[in-house]
Length: 328
Ligand code: BMA
Image 1 (cartoon, protein in one colour):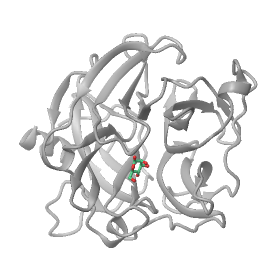
Image 2 (image 1 turned 90 degrees about the horizontal axis):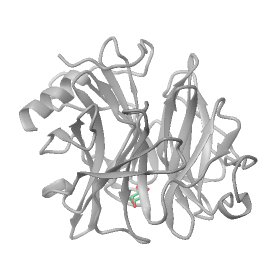
Image 3 (image 1 turned 90 degrees about the vertical axis):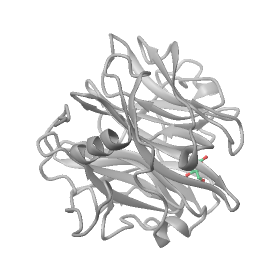
């Protein structure tokens, strides 16, 4: 059986698979965990990233405010389920940023991911700079966030860092896009010696049929296992009623992550519940982070629901590997 390479997290949020459930991924019975109005300014809180921090949890949340501006807010939690979110958005510190008057201006930010590498937490997000691109910042304490250079030129979305260097370089997945509600999109891999200069771009995966026929994008930080990087990613289908966002899984080579070892044919979870199907944007399940326990192989997935609220779903590394072995 595959093993997660990482830390034990025995007290992570968890709920056993319901009796009679035959799906590899199951929803938390108390979903949604974060309502749209948890803080006064919020129109909606979704597509957000949670991580372990000391003996608690921290997160960076996508909060669209009541002016419908897309903002990033820090939050904390004792148990990973019940969250307190700062009422004020993150104000990025730009003191070490070259040309801060140019690249330090915050236009908008959405769909954050958080990734611990070496000694600090890095945040990537879809950052407004003459169109969407990938913003980057780091923090040690989720109080002060230091802005770094944008990772790519526009247009790009779904920038997701790997949690360690690969062959001596930092590594990221991303999805080149356009300035609108992009009707295409494949996942690419890029690497960098210093998190500023990026290159060695490699194609990872293209769209396929059905649930992932319009575009795909990396979701949470890839999970390292002894068999490969487990990638949970979203896929989009264009129906007569617009885009439908589901998520699925693939396994990427550990040393050459642009090589896809396995890829599920079906989705793992598609929008089916009321809170996934009804909201500001109907029919969206959009995963941005995971918690994992290396001892039990448990995985908790945080995902945005209908661009309105935040939900959780559970699985295990064995469940996903079985799924990939059946379907990949
Ligand atoms: C994408 C992003 C996501 C959103 C999705 C569905 O382009 O904007 O934040 O969840 O569309 O609206």
